[in-house]
Every structure is written in C-alpha cells, then in structure tokens.
Length: 149
Image (tube, rainbow, N blue to C red; front, side):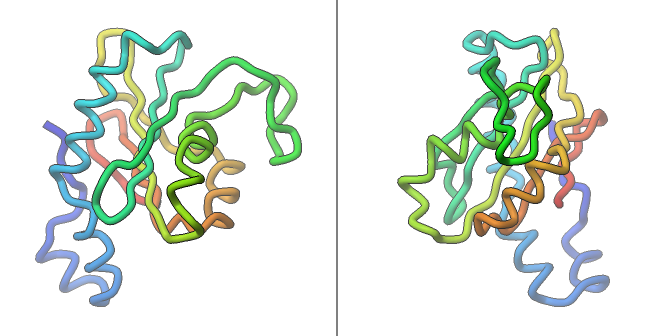
C-alpha cells in the first residue's frame, strides 16, 4: 500500500501547526484512492508514460486528467517537443468547478505492469500551478511513497 512519507507526531514536533494541518488534510485514504483510480483508468491511457493527475478540493476528488499527445502549450513555457501534461488536462477539466478557490493536486505515474513510478511535476507545471491557487502538489516516488511540493 501507499505510505505517507511523514508521521503525524513527527510533523507536529518538527513543523508549525499550519503546515501540520495542511498535510493532515490530505488523508492516506484519499491518496490510496488516487492510486486505485489510476490503476482502474490504466486501460484508457494511450501514452507510453502513464501519468494521472487528480484535482482535490475539500478532501474530495473533483476531476482527473492524463497526459496526451497534442501541440505543446508553448505559451506556458513548454518546449516544442513536449506533450500536454496531465496537470494541465486535469486543471482544464476542473476549472469550471474550482471558481478560483484553493485546491490540491495528486500525481500518480504507473509503469507497464501498473507499478508506481515517480511522478514529480516538471518545473513549468509546478510554477504554473502555483499561480492558479494550487496549495499542494502530491506526487508518487519510485518506492510508492507520496511526497508533497
């Protein structure tokens, strides 16, 4: 199963209460649900690298997206050879539901045998999401642990 990288007691001692509260808002159950959904959706994915991004608000998954082959979004800073990333596709699907409110994103990447891989967002996606009121971006590591940006 997917494990959170931080223990609750460690967080309380190491960080201030606000950071501790923000990390506890994203529950282990919700992160596990994102992995389960990605494994269910794997048959719909057509790309070699299977990235899934879930938009979360009020501790609920409200929308999701995957990376896809299309003209890159050069105006956002992507290079001409890149594809459209799952972060953008998930945000595009959810933008009508967000109404400018704070949200979080969860990135999951699966390998050919549905094993969890690293899914850290690129610098362009990370910078862009910060401008959209995205409070946290959770991503999987190759060891199956979620980390937060």
